[in-house]
Image 1 (cartoon, rainbow, N blue to C red):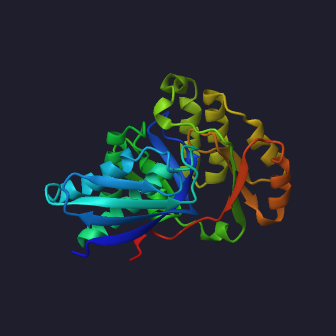
Image 2 (spheres, one colour):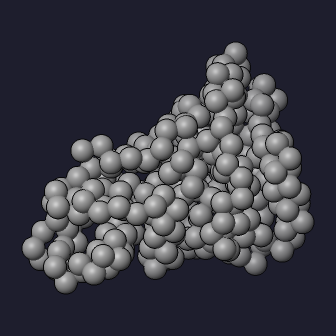
Length: 293
């Protein structure tokens, strides 16, 4: 047993939000969360420090560490001190919870010198997210995209990875821009009754992704969920008018994602200048989550 380890997981963004159908798709981006876990001899005491947002609720981190200790029947032997740092804005639809869970579980495994298969790690994070009440669908799609990078298509209800695809060719041509409003929006507060009206269109977007039309699906999905949530769809349509390849709501929002050719980045940035919030630029990610110390 090492007793201490750190791990890094990259972020993700929505192609198809699984809230309406329990089937989703997402892709990896090079935003990140790093977690450091140090085991202690105080069983069931899990101290947390979220360096990038000290006011954020630490319950997900506590649940994920506890889940790993329980998996190896060590919950009565160890506690932990956990620190996380991230450049992913929390509660903006940018998969901060899924990314944090992946990083914390990997760091805990590293501290214990224990091993789990990749999908077991992801599923443990999904279970922890349910227990922490930070998810509706389990966000298995987001967790897979964060963990593996590239494109993933999933059945969230059954935690099945349906399709996994590299986006390296797209990586050479596109960047990812996020328009991030200042106000947080927590998944647990989502009104799920709104989804019945968009279920068929979201299903069509999912099928588009299976056929390889993932960027088209991102735009369609964004239109559907912007309608359901009453979000400002003009952020996406202005990006498209400025030359974006695709644009739409990320997760439950309020962030909007745009896939932009490197030749049109400044035009899309200019189109977003009138909207409140900030613009974050990222690249597509294909790097797998990993223990780094």
